[in-house]
Length: 162
Image 1 (tube, rainbow, N blue to C red):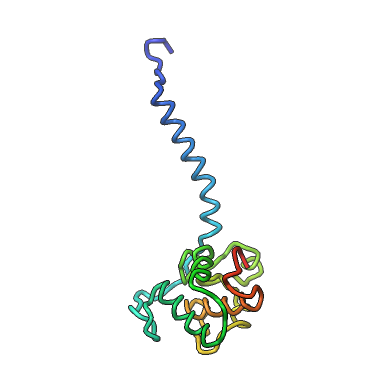
Image 2 (tube, rainbow, N blue to C red):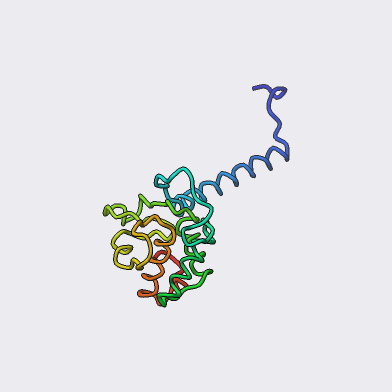
């Protein structure tokens, strides 16, 4: 190529390339983390009611508050913040989340729901008065908190996969 038609790299083009490379690096580092914390969604119904049958808002805040009310009746320890922190880590607040890639999934018992509970744990720690559907947000939270209380003293003491 002759000198007259060679591309001249300016300081700005080097900066743009460096930023693009850095952005790509961040994406490469972030994608495995996103994959590790995200879960596939199980089929859900097309519409949801504005409130739960117990009258709480049919959203993450309402599910946690309803679970806390049941937990208080059953003397299961836990706080809003402890439950919320663990839900966000486990399912990002998706009640239909299912983990199809970890060791439990490899054994045929994938983790499910807001707090990523496996079926045997859900069945063993199910709390009377809640649904037997592992994807039911209140049943999932309450069973997971019952398990965490038996194993760790409280969901508040759980800071990682459990």
